[in-house]
Image (cartoon, rainbow, N blue to C red):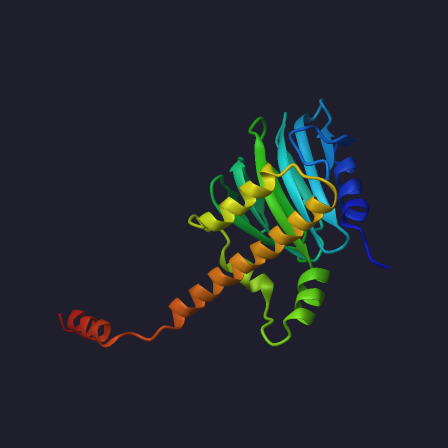
Length: 226
């Protein structure tokens, strides 16, 4: 039986962490679902659009009154997001969470733990692609070209110069459609995000494997001789 990422994962996760389901405010697409953080804990919203067990799109727009430790089991997934505002650290392995660059997470490994600092708005937009999509559907559609998508996503982690992805995430965040147009729009953007990551990864691979030119070799020999 197929799982539904919204009902089986996000609803219980958010409601266990003091988020209350509400009708979508006008600032979000009505195609998704929205939760508001309990006033005693913080302020703001968590919006999610999900398609069955295939992918979801998330907008974080909230803050905590006190430092908050996230400790949760992520599903088997690959995700990419842009933080416009955040202050905190991931704890295993340790790395600072910083605004302005593209960050990726590969789920299904050890529990995800992060410390979010108090009173600093957490504003982010992200796309999460579940294993049923990248291991089953894509592998069947592209059997000759398929490779490890998690490795491709990890290759663009902390990319400070990825304007095409930033533009895509901005378009996703700004979209306000509903119904079938929204379903088509979000699926197209997920596919486009995968294409951008794969293209960036292949360009990195080509740069790493490109042989040195005769001029490069001569230059290295001159430096070594000096």
